[in-house]
Length: 373
Ligand SMILES: [Zn+2]
Image (cartoon, rainbow, N blue to C red):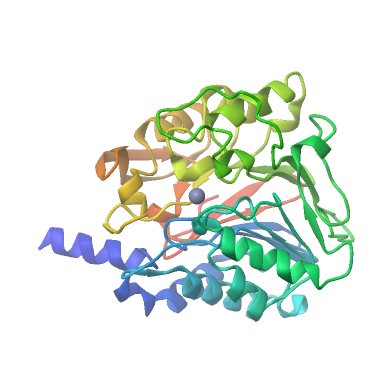
């Protein structure tokens, strides 16, 4: 009986499931109800789109979406989860008039680009950046963004290439950072993008060389809002992370408050040196629940991995309401884990929203659960 109710709870909390598809609207409403009535904040919404990534940045004067999810199978329709979430968001922020000031695609894999057609069709997009690539499992939707941009005026689209990022402080321009908010103006800069020449990265344990893997060409953004800051690395893997660390040596550019954990918490998406350089207060995985056994899911990949969860719990001081979860030790193999540091996952918590004030104070809200100071 206890086991059955736990399973039902897991289904209700995971928005990408047949039962919970009907509950998505209610969950979104529950999340929205917990938000502060103020709008002079930076809200970072990690949307639960199953296995994949979709992070909505809500600012006083505009919105930015990094990646579009997600997972598509018998128990998850990420396009629906994404558009339901964005619809509810724009219903609250009517002042934004269904407009994304910036759409970012980190790299052309389908768990990041699947929702591109729906987003371009349903919302007004003013600017877009990506790594300029269109090969890979998500190359077709990324190519669709390029076709969309081809019909727009110059200054609408920019391809971020590492060779154009002058130094550790990153690159910004009117496309990468199109927002001009009056009181606190967010600063958006790119620290990584498409790498045009093979740096000779040493190979990892699987077939493709790291240079051939689109993950290592991910657009990496640092975003600042007053004293609050965050790093969003897409699916950047260890060889590129090491180069990013080398480029940034002696510069505090990687020192941030919020970390979107790279590559869904894969064993190759975070290193101890990287965690040390960031010294984050809050880390968030975007991965599907281990309770859903689908192809290309977090369960199949073993995300998030136990070692990465432990690395973050060791490196983060801030606490969260403790939660018992499943952590991956291998593909399709999970063990129980106990989380009491400010480490969150869309697979454990549903939608995760961080409300950051310009003075650096932060609050975390998760769908269907109470907020945490
Ligand atoms: Zn991915």
